[in-house]
Length: 435
Image 1 (cartoon, rainbow, N blue to C red):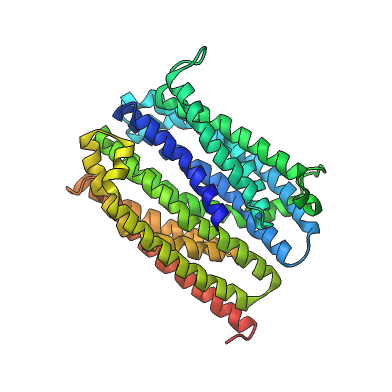
Image 2 (image 1 turned 90 degrees about the horizontal axis):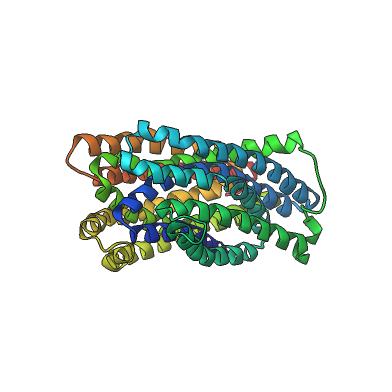
């Protein structure tokens, strides 16, 4: 989990750096980046989430001691990733056309639109990087991805500065410059990881990049069958969080900016249970390939206990350091005051969020992805979203209404996912006659 956690923190740090740098420009720039990120993140995670299928498929082949399948899985995943990345990029190019219909204030449209146009060019790199990352981590080699992510995180600061403030022929683009910087970094990260995999001896037995392989419809269908529900499940959850900025847009840019600060902070902390979930997917995927049900059950128990401890630590961290953390984002008193209030809601859902993402990681390791997809859709879009919209638009709860909806949705998702995990374990125990 630890190298994966560092990687997740680094990648979440991209959004953190964008938010902090935009916040120090103005509340207007911070609100514009909130709208752009709010639309980009769900699209990015939907398509890169599909590529998470690479991880349990490679882990299963590794556990079943069939290494000859691993290179094929990786190559076919790259084909799928390339196609999906192009589709995602085209969607982001068209996305600015929807902004006026979403009720986005007119003064935010130019920078939010330019951000989406720019960052769309990096989408093929995002999806192919996700495929290679899944291949490497499932084989027990998460550290190369970690090192590349940390280097990219450091490089983002000067790149952001160049495109935000201008340098030579590059004009000052304000917060929209973050889109250009991030797209460039995504391609550099893909190239770096591909070169490492091609050269490192640890990938020699399962090398996917030295041999060309045509698209195999069998593997494409299997990757999509397993990955599409994963991507959609992540999309249903993250899009709810991200579109909250759009729901709040009528309340003004001060409220949107405060919401973005609270959301950015909780997104960073979410990387902790998310990393645990990825580690659970890998370990359970390997034991699933070995058909070692007892080991799978032990991994689940340890995973959920770890998730509980980590959530309690996050809650304590948020409670004790709220003022100091918010000061990193903004010096605007009005923005900071609302953000302080919203972080209280974030504290309230840490346990449920940690349990539900860990349960989803366990289910992915068992290659059970359709049920979690439907669970997340119901919890977030049939329960949480309508409640949040109603509270914001028709009551005096203000921005807190969205967060109340999030808490209710996460509670429903957590309950249903843990119930599904219990049912799967019971079924496997009966199948293998384990008491």
